[in-house]
Each structure stands twice: as structure tokens, then as C-alpha cells.
Image (cartoon, helix red, strand yellow):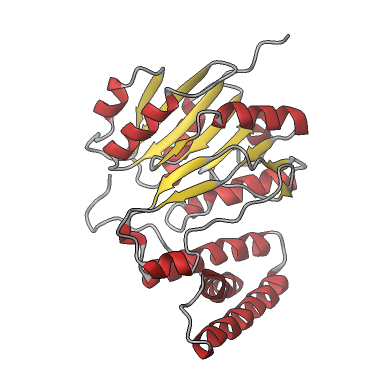
Length: 301
């Protein structure tokens, strides 16, 4: 049997030391069929993640990236790691013990260049009932093996060679403040002929904070998601399609929200998300970028 290829588990973090600690402790329990090293990229100039990283019993490489933004942090992990396989997971998540082994098995069996999986939301006891009723924060699930034209870094395993073949072999700084650099990178891998598949058994969990449970936050996130989708269409030369898709989403979302009002039921995520994502796609068709990640004034860490 051949020796399993080493994996670099890449974690970008910013002022979440306790959540990072939970993640690193969960990685200790991984059922890993091969060696892995964890790259913690601290995007905080104050170094709030350094102590947590140094206290881990794992093989951890701590890096500090002074340039603010998730793109700079992700690229630091890319440039400072050497392993042939790259796994990405967010600093506010924690995986199932079989997570990495399952991703690797799916990659081998499907001969994929990238494999990504579901993020399951975990809610605090104080969660408002409308969040549960509306299905907010419940992400879509797909049959294992489903082929996609993009992926996200909240739960993904990718071959380094698939990134290195790109004209820009890293995450694009144009998406630093808007988000979506991961969707953009994996979409470019797809356009280069790379195979991206879904693995529904490779699960990671995310604790949803109460601070996100507001209509304003949900509207902004949905609009930004739609904007990234539209920017990918425009970059591929499909601006007209962006206009059509954005208008269609807007109309369907408006009809769904109107139906919710008529039936006097809480707005459902399918209604709000479709409506706001339509706005986001149309923003992209007009050449506008939706900014989601703004740090406090004067915070350049």
C-alpha cells in the first residue's frame, strides 16, 4: 500500500482564541489515515492566537499575517505550507472525528481535485423561535459525488497541484473585503478542468452566535452571497445571464415573501435568501461589489 500523502490543515483566525482552542482540541481526535500539520494564521497584529496555538499538542505552525483580511491569511497558509494536500476549516468550527479521513477517501474514490462537505449549525438555547421556523442557518446537503463548479473553505480538501496550475495560484485580493475568494478560487479550478465533488459524510459543526440572529445580518449575508455569484458570472463573460438570473431571483423572492405575509407566517429563509441574493447578483451585473467584512475604524490588524 502507498503511504498517504501529508495534509496541511489551514486555519485563518482573527480574535477568536477560545473558538480556535475548541477547534484545535477537536483536531486531536481526528481519525487520520496519514500525517497532517496544522497551519494557524493569525490575522491579528496583537497575536491573540499565539498562546492557543503554542499550547496545542498537535504539530502546529503558527504564522502571523499583518495584512488585514481573510484573503491575506488564506494565502499565508498556502505559501508557507508544503504538503501536497490542503484542508481548510474555519476558526469557529470543529470537525467530526472522521472528517479528514472521509474527505480523503472521497477524493480517492472519485478522483477529484477538491472535495467539500457540509457545515452543520449548532444553536444556543436562547435562539429565537423564528430562526428555527424559518430554516435560517440550515445549509443545503447533497448526495455524495455531486459535482460542483465551486466550493468553500469552511470544509474542503484540495490538491495543491490544482491550485498551482492556475494563472493566479492563490486567493484573489479583490475579494478580501467582500468575501467569496474561496468560491472564486475553486471556480477557477473548475474552469481549468478540475473536478470538485461533494462529500456529505465529511461533517464539520459551527456554533451560531446570537449576534448573527438578526434580519439585517441575514439580509447582508444573502446579498453578499448573491453578489459573489454574479461576479463569477460576469468574470466568465455572462453579464447578460447575471441580469436575467438576478431579476428572476428578485421576482421569485418577492412573490415568496408576499405569500408569507398573506399566510401570516414568519418569513422563511428560502424567501428572504432568494430575494436578497437576487439583489446581489444584480449588483454584480451593474459592476457593484457588496462589502461584508469591515473591521472597526483604525483596526488595521
